[in-house]
Image (cartoon, helix red, strand yellow):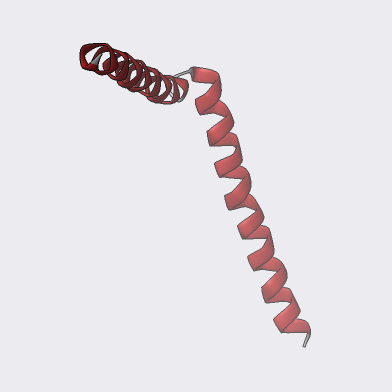
Length: 65
């Protein structure tokens, strides 16, 4: 009976280990795709553009006051 429980436990732990390893690999491979890198770059540049615009607006607000 102990051998059966040990085998079952080994199978469950092995399955979960392989499952989470594959999930981790999918996340790594996702950012290697060209279109994903393009989207990330777009939002990065959009963030910097919005920061620049808000900096200019802040300077004008301080100048008006």
